[in-house]
Image 1: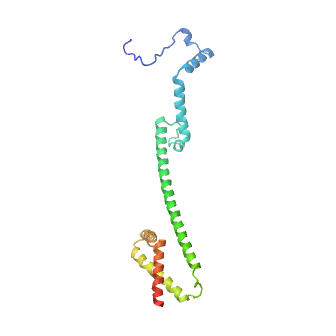
Image 2: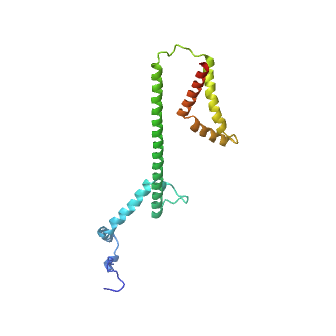
Image 3: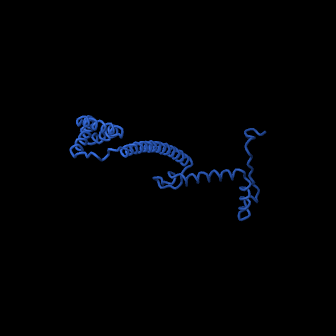
Length: 199
């Protein structure tokens, strides 16, 4: 074994005979044959093709750099690919959360629909429905009672320091005090109170 030579690496030989310096089609054909016989050439080609495919697929790799150079290093291509994959994972998680929220809203709407169907059915089964007319004053009293109850919670929850805080408080109040179940309880309370005054 020759000192300083790694036996695991292939030995590269160079043809230094006079005919190796010849030029023209014969020399070019011989060079192409050597490339075709080199087992590393297909691997290098596939690697380069892989980087080229990544650069053409990943949207961030298609953006022109500030210097206007069309040549992008392999390290940059890999980094942009990793960043884009992470971005897709975040977008997927966000969409899954939005889908979960929509499913909950659909479930809530189905529950509300079932409740209203029960209310309509109960009114239809009431034999005394439509016999007694409700006066406009009674309608106003019902409406006033509901609005008074809502205003109490509104006044206690809303801050008018500035418009931004006012907007935030209004949305928070709606989410907290204008839920279907909360409004239902308010209406039932008002009706019960007015019914007690009548009888």
